[in-house]
Image 1 (spheres, rainbow, N blue to C red):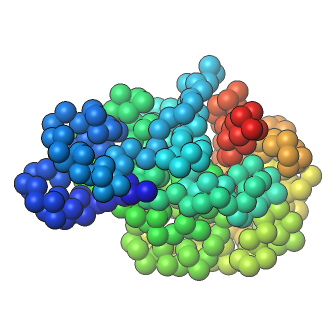
Image 2 (cartoon, rainbow, N blue to C red):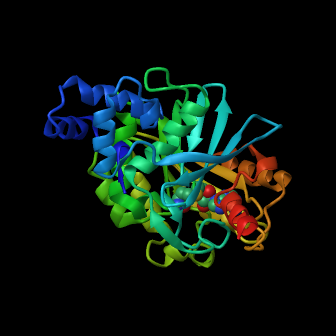
Length: 348
Ligand code: SAH
């Protein structure tokens, strides 16, 4: 499989030059690709060129919307995206006052195997290419009536299935593609990358100078608790993650976010709050508390909303900013990997 959306504009220009096409052709093609058009819809591109690209194994569209579900509560749209080899990933479009945020998947499945997450239930199937991750954004943008010049998706979060830093090269290329001026031109400020804390890869990422908002999935500030729910903690413990977040702030001056999904009786106790305060107090960050979404196969339950607010106020009193995340799309299985798992089961 060769995807045209994997190419940057200059790579596309090289390809068109190699084909002996005039120089404006690359941009024409690029605009069609970013509008989500497949070859038959590209009316300004000649049949000969389209046939040649197809014969050389190039696909214009690597991601299509297989199914979508619209929340009646808040307009959130959950997408099941189909990849060209038949694999399925999820995306979620959330509507906020400041714009539309698309949550994208970076891998089919995940190998991190966090104890509460549906994405890792069957391990990692494969990485998405940069053009496939971009394809999710292009497909959702088109779904909302947008194209390259009239952009409907304003923000992207890498918080779908997969661990972005475990698919390093593709994710970095995706960030550059989605930020490209003539493409969707989504500013790095409007992109959040969430990681469970692969610190070696993170340190490489620091050198890329891509100032996205960094989100660290902490979920516990006591090593024994974090190790019990996140196997990655055995390699990169709480201190290493918090230190990394401080390096990010020192480098970018961007306030980091810690994700903390509250699991009843596991990481929502007073000592958990105290450890978290001790770990991040005085550091410009925000703790994003999420009430755990129940995943049947995992069996862990979320803290009640009331206790989540109590946990947040304990943090605030301890000098740590905390927010309790609104639950969007609760009626359409908003949490990572849930919908794909269900769909696969249904069609098996
Ligand atoms: N692998 C990356 C990004 C994917 S998940 C990471 O670990 O950050 C995005 C966020 O959703 C992470 O913080 C993840 O821990 C959290 N999450 C996963 N399953 C969840 C669930 N069932 N309920 C609440 N949050 C969950």
